[in-house]
Every structure is written in C-alpha cells, then in structure tokens.
Length: 264
Image 1 (cartoon, one colour):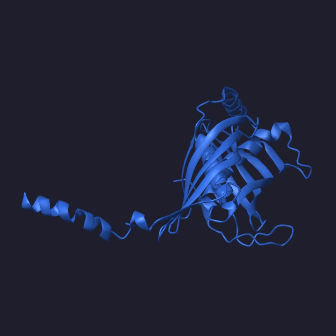
Image 2: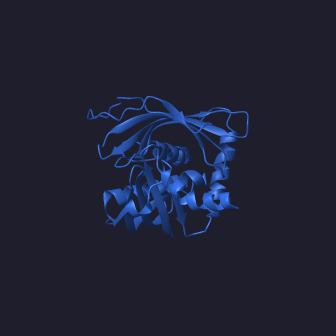
C-alpha cells in the first residue's frame, strides 16, 4: 500500500523528467493571417494528404479559401499549424464545405504529421465509377498506354490521357507530403513521359518522369515516380528526385538522390 502511494506521488515528477516531455505552459501560440504563405502551405499540404488517403484520382480536392489559421511553437519539437479552409473538387469545382487540419512540422521527423477532417461526407458516385472504369480499361490493355508532355506547352491535356494525369497527381500527393518541409512546398507541374507497367496481379502501375514546381525558389524538380494503384486504396509510390536537377532558368533543385517511397 505504501509503495503504491509513493509511486503515484512520484509519477508527475517522473513524467516531467522524460526527455520528450515539454510543459504546455512553455508553448507559444499566435494567430496568423489566412492569406499568409505559411497558412496557405499548411492548408494545401493537408488537402494533398487527404487526396493521398482517399485513393481516388477522379475526386482530387484543392483548397478554395483559408478562413482561419494559427501557429503553435513547441520548444525543441517543432511548429504545429491549425487551419480552417473551404475545399472543392478539382475536376468539377464543386465546393465540399469546410475542412479543418493540423500540420505538425517536427524537427526530428522527415515529413509533417497531418490530421485533416472535411465536414462533407458526400461521396461522389461518378468519381467512383470513373475510377473503376479507368481501372478496368488499364487492366484490359495488352499494349502499355504511353504519353508525354502532359499538359503540352499550351496547357492542353488530351481527354484520353486525363486519367493518366489524374493518377500521377494522386501518386504525387504522397511525394509532396513526403518531401514537405516548413517554408517549402511542391506541386506537380508537368508529366514529361508516362508509361503503363503491365502487371499480372489485380493492380495497375505507371512509371512517370515529371516536374515538380518548388516554392518559394520557383525551381523545377525533375522526379521519377512509380505508382501502383487499385480503386479505393491509397497508391503505393516509389520516387527519386536526383540532386542538382535544373529547370530551364538554371535554378537548382534541392538535394535528394535517395530512392524513397511507401513500399514497406
């Protein structure tokens, strides 16, 4: 009995002594303007992560407007953003309502921890049908589908290659989340080449050579991305963005020669 009481009395001190325990009173928090670049980056990262989890290339979401944002500084751990924003479906521009998210950039972690929730529970049946029809078409191929320069220099995407573009966006949602660091963000700019990889199992796969646009440096980062997918599941992605790749203006991309992905 006495040992149990002593243990409980010492428990708070033991918790405080843990190396990862940071007194909440030392956390500082401040509101940031919704149109601030940090707020927009946090919202875009959150919706990109949501796209990855959804596993649907035909119902990709994008941020419409950031309504509210705040930043919490956790000493020796990192920065945690809280954002509220409206979102819409990229393909139809249909508003889906309000989303809330936390995006936590931790000093000892390679990518942000993200929690996102969108108020709309609506599932677009057409998107599900489009996903499945695209999947069936790809599984029926005996000659691999290929494409290049998507979109072209005029911004045009061949309607027959639009699902291939959408699948690349879905795969890049993982890459963008995995590469994200505070103050820097990416979006897919163009597919240089795409080639279907025929498989004998129930999955479909594509190899992409593409450009990511990095902000704020405006560099074009060349990446090789391998995407494996089945409807209703997040894609499996391997990617490589060789160091010192350059865009047309000669700006260097960030270093990153390792081959990375979520094939685990």
